[in-house]
Image (cartoon, rainbow, N blue to C red; front, side, top):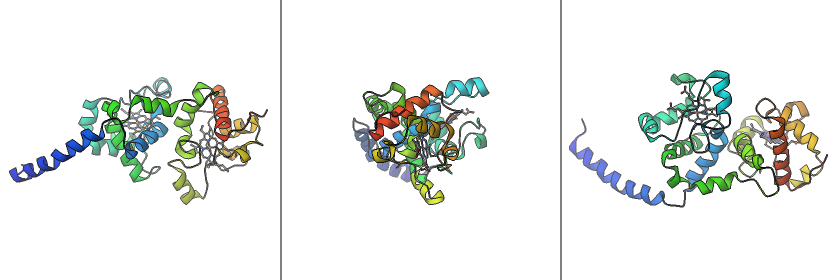
Length: 249
Ligand code: HEC
Ligand code: HEC
């Protein structure tokens, strides 16, 4: 039982907090919320969908191959039932340990605790996302640069930005831990002097087969199992755009 004085104290604390929350939820999203959003798009959206509707591009594959469905994260009732602590625990430990599908990965080892908190807060805000981060901000973030294939930017955000960074500068959310643990840096994809001499074929080979097969770091993953040849070509075009270099046969 909660004592009356504690209840009063809670109400006193909750009062200003609610005010704060409502003033924050107007148009301009906080820096933490934006970082949570970018990390969500980098690590979760390919399964859970851009807005948490459970309809990311990998959802259909998961459903046909294993009958698993990424949870819908835009349902207030669902998130309320889990609570913030419950959601955070699932993100850290993954589905397999908590009576859910093991296709929900464990992120605790891969992402630093501050980022996990930012992602958790972003997920908790998904049901009311229109207030947390306006849809237009998300659209703009995912929009392909002029003259590049529609899908390139989106694929980059889903599959590459976690390491290479939101704008490809080699400063993704994982970059620090890759540097500290493995002494490797995701390539800066805006480095024109480096990319001007690379052929499209070389870029295609590294993206599709991974760094290990092309004399680069094994921490550059192979994408040939996840992405189609067309999608990998779109990514080559996207790398051309970020590095401001011309296509080179
Ligand atoms: C490879 C696909 C995949 C990725 C990537 C993924 N998830 Fe999931 N997630 C799932 C699946 C599948 C489930 C459903 C598990 C079940 O119900 O058995 C799930 C379940 C969840 C749940 C539990 C919801 C509930 O009501 O039980 C949360 C929370 C969640 N995911 C958050 C995230 C977050 C945050 C990220 C990114 C950091 C993420 N997921 C990345 C596939 C994925
Ligand atoms: C787990 C982290 C990680 C992810 C995810 C990742 N990369 Fe990389 N990538 C690296 C690292 C590390 C290197 C540096 C390899 C080296 O220089 O030895 C690299 C190098 C590259 C290069 C330079 C190749 C060259 O010729 O030197 C390109 C292009 C590239 N990545 C594209 C991508 C694309 C496109 C994606 C998404 C489909 C992606 N990367 C996802 C870590 C990653």
